[in-house]
Every structure is written in C-alpha cells, then in structure tokens.
Amino acid sequence: MYTLQNWLRESQLHRWICALIACFVGQTLLELMGWISTWEVEAGLLRYFALNPLHTWHIGEGWTLLTYGFLHYGVMHLLLNVLMLYFAGHMLKTFWLDDQVSRLFLLGIAGGGLAYFFATLYFTQWPPLVGASGGVLALLLAATRLSPFMPVYVFGILRLPLWGVSLLLLAISVSGLQGPNAGGNIAHLGGALVGWSLAKSPHWLFPEKRSARTGRKPSKLHVVAAEGLDLDSILEKIGRVGYDKLSAKEKAFLARYGKK
Image (cartoon, rainbow, N blue to C red):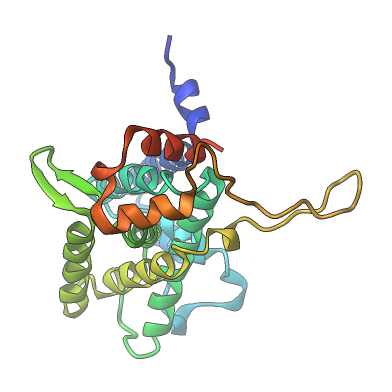
C-alpha cells in the first residue's frame, strides 16, 4: 500500500511541502489560541519568525532570513506556494539532483529575504515578510533557464511554454511593486534572480565533502555518457526545441539522471 511515508521518502521536495503545511497548522492553532485568550500570539510570531524591516531588525535574528518562508498569510497563500513548489521542483529535478533542488529552494528564500531586507532601507513602512514564494520562484526560474520551452498545462487545459508562465509571474510581481504587497513582490524577484543565476551552476549547491575514513576529497561529480548520450547535449536540445521533442531514450536518460 502506498502511504504518506512512502511519498515522503521519494523526494526532499515532499518533505519541504509537509514542513510548510505543518508550520501553517501550528501557526493557525497558535493564532486561534491567541484569539480566544486575547494574547497577541500573531504579533509574537511575526516579531520572532517573520522577516521585519531593517530598522526594527536586530543582528541576533539572522534565522528570520529562512524562518519567514515557513509562515503564511492564509490558506490560499500556502496552497499556491505548495502547488508551485511541487511542480517547479519536479521540473527542475529533471536536470538536477534532489539535494541541489532542496538547497536552491532554501537559497531562494534567503535571496528573496535579502532583497526585501535591503529595500526596507527606503520603504520603512512595509509589513513583515512571510511566505516561501522566493524559494519557489528560484526553482521555477532555474527550470525555465534550462528548458524554456518545456510545456506547462495551466489548469490542465491551457498549454504554455515554461518561459511564458515565468514571464507572466514576473510581470505580476513587477506590477505589484506599487501595491500593498510590494515587499512580497520584491522577494519574488530576489528569489527569481537567485534561481536564474544558479541554473547552470548546480555544482555550487553540491559542495565537496571529505571522507570520514580517508580525509580525502571525493572526486567531482561528472555526467558520464551512456548509450551515446550526455546531459549537456540533451539540455541544449531541450533549450532549442523543448522537452516534448526528446526521443524516448533521451527522456529515459534524463529520468535516470534525476534519480541519482
């Protein structure tokens, strides 16, 4: 029988999704308790776990560059981020290792937080930042740079190239820079920039580790050609004509590489 435990073991992405949901459930319960007891629980959560503007931030609160990504302003905010994380993450796993995708997600959250953080030098009235959108946009833009013409079915009906979906989301974020969620939108753009910048440098997210027994560094990760195929040529073909144009052998090669 296929269980939640099996699903969690399949990918770190699934574990991040469960972490986001679990944090939201905890956040909701605490806010409900605060509402019943008249304690200012929500204000406390935002103070210690959300990312606050620079002028109210203290140097000992560095963890908020990541923890803000695990708070959300409502069910729809969470749902959109979870769905985007699932699909964008699995698209990127076509080309990257599971560990690399996971690390980019966290770097995207941090990058979006830094973009917001420094923008509050000028926009001091922005509310605290919450949400994992920066990490999600990092995954989406990395996948877009590697395979811009990969087809995406919006609502299961409308077929768009991946670059079209990314461009639409970026345009929405840019247009929202003058609105009430300007801080959130600047974080989207910061995360997107991280993903685009690292898309072709996944080795930066897979640092070498010394062997516990020998003290020697392991050899660098190389993509070995198999059956006349290699990753670079396949990625180049995807960039030219899209994922659908790959042969069955090329798709199988990518699937095997994504499971390494």
